[in-house]
Amino acid sequence: MKILRAKPWDMNENLVTDEKIYNDRRLLMKIGAIAGAGAMMPLSLEAAKNYPGKALNFKKNSGFSGLEASSYDQITTYNNFYEFSLSKDGPSKLAHTLEPEPWTIEITGEVEKPMVIDVAKILAEYPLEERTYRFRCVEGWSMVVPWIGFELSYLLKKVGLTSKSKFVQFQTKYDPKMFPEQDKEGFFGNIPFPYVEGLRIDEAMNPLTLLSLGLYGKTLPKQNGAPIRLVVPWKYGFKSIKSITKIHVSSGMTRSTWNEVNPKEYGFYSNVNPNVSHPRWSQAKERPLGAFFKKKTEIFNGYGEEVASLYKGMDLQVNF
Ligand SMILES: Nc1nc2c(c(=O)[nH]1)N[C@H]1C(S)=C(S)[C@@H](COP(=O)(O)O)O[C@H]1N2
Ligand SMILES: [Mo]
Image (cartoon, rainbow, N blue to C red; front, side):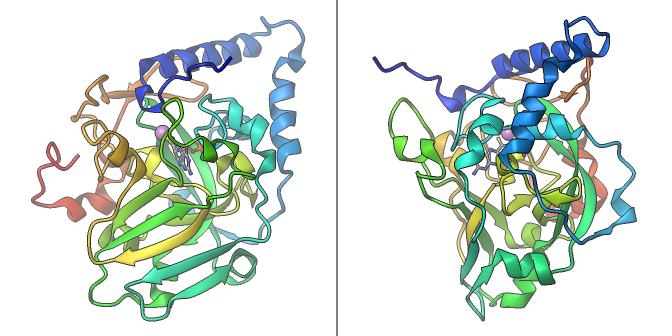
């Protein structure tokens, strides 16, 4: 018998409750209330076994090193990756089917030199740096991640934007052998795959926008979007699309999965904004992974100085 799964776009406070249990468990661990200090071990071992990761060559960007990062365990065992699972601890257990090597990214559309780039070449030749960014999920939890990556603008300059380039679309690889939930499209309310996301060209060219290939000094764990993902720290987490294999530059606005599934709840822009509630919950506060209390959410996730000018004159209640 088939079991009806929750619709992913019903993600709501329930998941925050989930997280409360998770956090309580961590707290209990800390004070030794859970018998056997190894209680958390299976999770972290699972994550490591999944993909041990290769050490990367990178330099630390001291301009983005001031935040205290969430732990490796937190970042790699509390995930959203619907191609594997709708649960937070599912991706770390199930993502072993993802084969991140070999991997290419195809860049097409309004560019002077369309090309296919091997991720191995990026790892060997691109200027990788470590930047510790805040990361805020639309569901109300947040974390701090020491990403390793390079500015998306570096790649877009390499391919050369034409005068018609206005938007950029990113696409996750479609391969149900690697991503088992992908061929269940249409059943039980799964989201349409492949997952796609988009940015306006000036957002894509902003120096904060990264393509990330690693965290905590090593290649990306599979559950975090190996081998390469987007990181847009002033937007809700779902904009930071994982396991990208296509980048398409266009003159018109691009599709994005969550916006298409439920435009009233997930805007194209999806800038972190404590003053614009999700229709079903407030965005004024967030719960950092591992923390007991919520804290205030900052406009543009604290990156207003760098990005507020991109939205000058725009009504952020309408263009949410
Ligand atoms: N392809 C793909 N990318 C995705 C998602 C997904 O389900 N599939 N989930 C998004 C959401 S909702 C969040 S919060 C982040 C989670 O990233 P993390 O698991 O590395 O924390 O990935 C985003 N990118
Ligand atoms: Mo998210």
